[in-house]
Length: 121
Image (cartoon, rainbow, N blue to C red; front, top):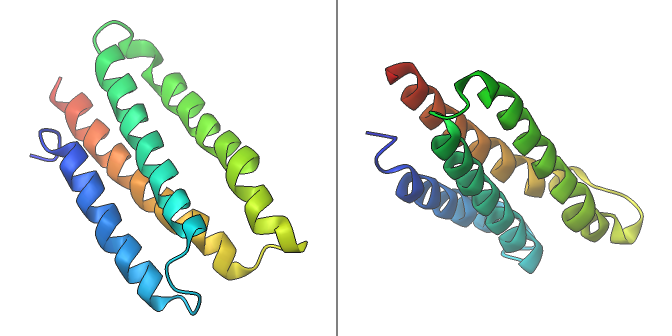
């Protein structure tokens, strides 16, 4: 079931987590928090789509493709998000959580869905 509704599950889970995350932060909902969730959802959806499309043509290379996509996620973090977090010269635990919480949830959702699909084939 997760495979059929991956995108809706990913978006629903991320929106719910975004709301909880925003309500618990003392700064509330910020553009940086929204951007972090948006980027992570888009990258997870793109990674799922890529691996889903390549699963038949290159089944022996899917692990390397997944690792490459994970490297792209971290590259995006270092290029787009970290400069925003380090604008004051330090990265606080709250700023780290603003990246790591959506990253870990979207990556886990993506991984679970892909494992289920690949184990069926």
